[in-house]
Image (cartoon, rainbow, N blue to C red; front, side, top):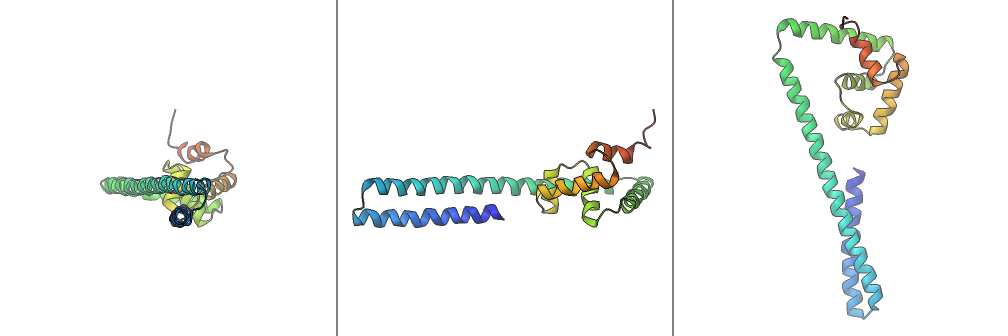
Length: 164
């Protein structure tokens, strides 16, 4: 949202300075001043364009990520009843562990997305929060779970399934 506001402000600066340049030309203002204002117009426009392109890329990435998640959910619909039951039971076990660790609702959501393998950036996009917030929540999750990080956290839930 802040990026959009900055882009709009830059476009407004560009337009206002453009009209100021036209007025200055008609008033016979010194050339150096006109060149200075033209540079402001050009720089404002270029930065606004780059910002708008970046915003579009981010929105496109978020859209594709949400599509992938929806596609993943569709894949899960095609599994056998036995797998559905096992998956539901395992999810219940995971949520019970979250309760034992006293994770908040937000921390539980982040935890499940971490277990699904999403990056902090992807989680922040899916949850429409800042990446810094997700990192802080992950840090709290690891602390409450008494693990050292993402890999230990995932391993905590998988170690009983893997036999050597």
